[in-house]
Structures are given as C-alpha cells and as structure tokens.
Image (cartoon, rainbow, N blue to C red; front, side, top):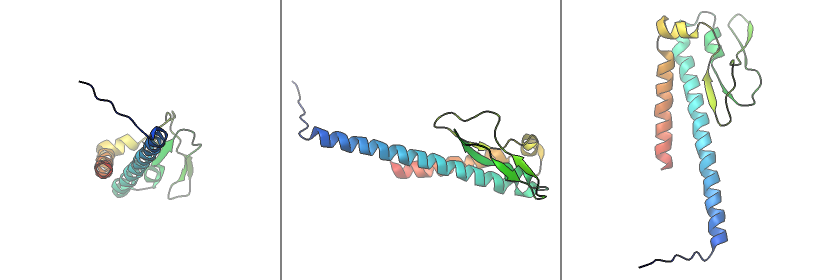
Length: 134
C-alpha cells in the first residue's frame, strides 16, 4: 500500500510556511525580550527595600549583542558604566548588573533572594505567554 500526496500550489504553500516560520520567530524573540524586561523590573522592585544610594537598583539592565555602553546614575548623581565584562552571543539577551556587591545583597542583604525571585517572575511570565502561542 502506498499513499501519494500532491501539493497543487506548492509555491504558495511554501511561501505561507516561510511566512509562518518568520512570524513564529518574531513572536518568540518578542516573548524573550518581554521576559527579560519582566525579570529586570522584578529585580529592581525586589531590590527597592535595600536602596541606600540607588546604585545597585539603577545598574540592573538588559543587554544584547552589539549594544554599546550601559550608563546609569545613582541617587547622588554619580555616573557608572553598567556594561558586563563579557558580551552576549547572537540571539542571547542578558539581564543583570555588574555591581560588585550585588551578590552580597542577594545572599544576605535586606533584598535577600531578589535574583531568584525575579527569575521566577520571568519564568511565570514566559510560561503564560508560550501557553497562549500554542
């Protein structure tokens, strides 16, 4: 037994499939970008109780390949460069800070656990968005 499938309008079907693929890729990247912003906003919100100078909170940002500096300013007007030591690869989007004492605040400061809480918020956000795409 054999089955033969003939696609009468192959070119149109192929164009449609390519368009759908591009739309899905665009949707996927938008979900990733929105998730990164959700994580960033959550980190800043969870850091808020520990703010003294505002430097750590202000330093949290997103970064993707090819982006230049990431300047920020604390409550006293001091300007810092927030650029990470290494660079994201193509298709990556990073969220974080380059402030040296960030881990100390996360582990034992008044904003204890801010990083994990923010990542969890991002996971919930992404799952909800992906479930709508299905």
